[in-house]
Length: 110
Image (cartoon, one colour):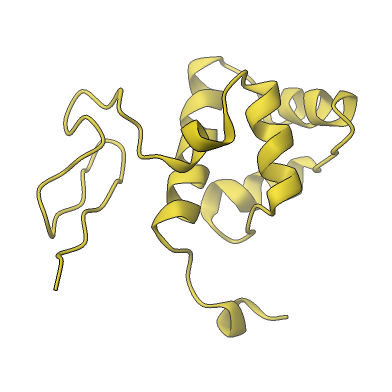
């Protein structure tokens, strides 16, 4: 299925993508280190696949999500939420804005 057929990542998908990148960078893990940890956890994702997740070109399926949460010692829910540790917006930018630090967006309600 092509990327266009699936549509762009939604808020939860973008939260997961940004959280994985943030956590990897905080721990100073290379893509190779994450790949090795995921392989040991039984859910290998190549460095190319991890890079594609990082840029939003590859979606994280539920099995990937569980494995990623495990290697980062988090719950699945924590990976799905905006990063509350953002020093700028604390995971909740004003409605209609995108935080430049963590890239979390707030969609206006109807």
